[in-house]
View 1 (cartoon, rainbow over the protein chains, first blue to last red):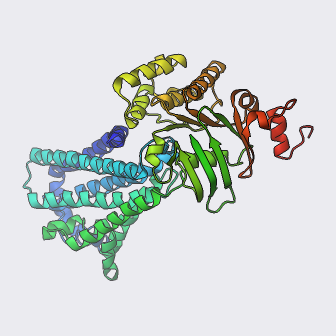
View 2: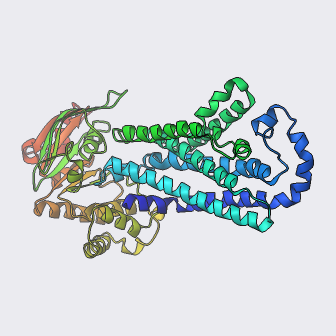
View 3: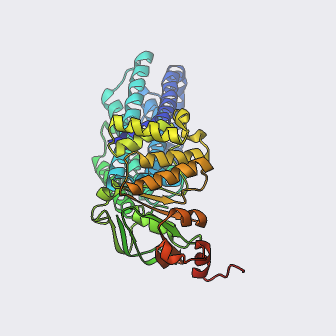
Length: 261
Length: 241
């Protein structure tokens, strides 16, 4: 586990920054709710009658003026996008960064197999995503308790679990990409996460493109649907987790044969 | 110690690579590998060190096939690339401990060796500093120390003298000789032909991926000639040109 520990040490600063940033914006969103509550109730009619915009963010399914509606859309976007970028960047740089910094040459001439490098780096990515989610979840709960709102815990848990799964799926896909990249890769990671997010928006707006939800993890992590149905679409979860598994398998297949430059 | 038999390696989408390279580096050899830029020296070294896979041929380290048992081979050698790109976010001592952990070097041994080599190269005081603050020469010294930490039988170096100060160069040459006296071997690429001629007992010249000459230095460099003359002759250039 030498490489695993090394990866965690290497990533701790970035993990702290991302966790603090996401937590900060989430907590701010939560603490804004009591102030905005009155206005939100008035604005719900407006938000729920904005056509494509309303559909894109699922505001046709839930009441934006309620705590759960507000949390699913406002806070959900913070965790959803923030967590997605974090996971994508973390995974896409996992293998590529060694090559970009030319440290891979050193590492791979030592008695460590490439499979071990991939496994320990992959585990480090997974653990960092778990740590970030646990901290964000705990701070979110503390904030909710502080503002004393009525919380549907099942939906809150499902929302956070769904965002965690989004990050796992994106990390798996980006980990696979990482094996092909020799440069920075951060742009690619952000690109993948953003594309997936927009695919879900398109699927929300266009009836004929609804099945696109199956090819993006944001499809099953649609906050409005989760709150409205108090459930996850497990079919979508399984399909997307398969993408993640394929991504990791591709990483093994490619990196074990790759000529490091 | 190191047998390279008919090594062939070509990069996809490029005509660069090496063809049928055969070199035998025995115990006690200090073997220089010379050739101009892009001749195939680094490609050969990267294949030998397992950084690159190869298309054909066989590489044996201490009788063990690199293809069949890469980890066992890698425990027996140390490699220092031409550019010491180390983990910048670690301190020198953290980096050395990381490498010692990989090679499972015991606490006492690693401490003794780090003290000895860091003392010899005069970077003992700087080991607590971040590698990002090191000069090229200091990084090169740290890379050399990390390569020696598990006492390898075979030392493989790519342009080892680039960036080293004269004192460190002398120390490195001394270390190379000691490894060979202890029954190990050293295989390195270089452009510094004078050093190669004085330091090495064997030499190979490579051009466009093909080994043009290899063997004992004394057999290749005949009396009244220098390695430089032989090299220029081998690559088809007249010194007067």
